[in-house]
Image (cartoon, rainbow, N blue to C red):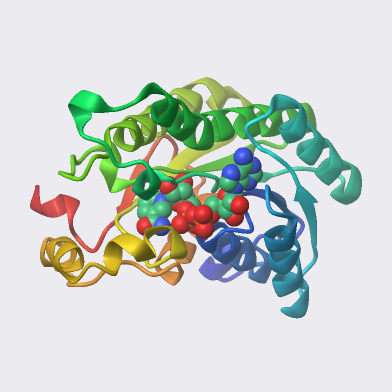
Length: 261
Ligand SMILES: NC(=O)c1ccc[n+]([C@@H]2O[C@H](COP(=O)([O-])OP(=O)(O)OC[C@H]3O[C@@H](n4cnc5c(N)ncnc54)[C@H](O)[C@@H]3O)[C@@H](O)[C@H]2O)c1
């Protein structure tokens, strides 16, 4: 058996929440290419179906759900539907989130409605999807993998009106460690990736400002922002047997940004 086989996911079943998004769809396709059957869940039916199609076009097996993953019932419906279709659940990737660039306010004025929206989108979605998935993994008795998406903003401030987002990503990093501790007894590992800016539609508007982009890139030792393909290798590691003894970890995917702090 090759050491690379530890990264294979043949026979495994994954739910990618927010799997229609830029990062979620890239991770969903990567999991499928490693052999997993993948359920894509997204608020947007079009994006969910496009991600499903991308996997099927690549020879993989997928289903899609249009669902609002901030609701417990919807998260439960996705997990139950996945188990019904594929017979088990091994992996959940929580890729719903973001929104920071849409609600930039000075810290001393940060409004409650924007704060609550960012928390719903990032923290509530991660919470309810992980709870539903963990219940299915515990019932399945085979352990599992939870992969959250935090951000370098969980540990680095940014002078750009990000109060709610940094707090939400900090909460996701903390929950990653908490769930790793609680769910270890069930053989479930919980880890997070923490990217810096990834070149996606969510941050395109911010990065279109040359001064802003230069400010970002100049602080990154590797001299560029990330691409979605920079996240798929680490995601595969955390979702596979290659990371069997790794839990509660938050991996910066940031071109060395946090190493400079
Ligand atoms: N893009 C970046 O630079 C960057 C950097 C660090 C971390 N992140 C994080 O990565 C994650 C994904 O970001 P992205 O850039 O791929 O964003 P994206 O907007 O492309 O993807 C998010 C997906 O979630 C879906 N979604 C939104 N609300 C939902 C809901 N209630 N229920 C179900 N689906 C819902 C959207 O339709 C979208 O397809 C986010 O948590 C974000 O904070 C992104």
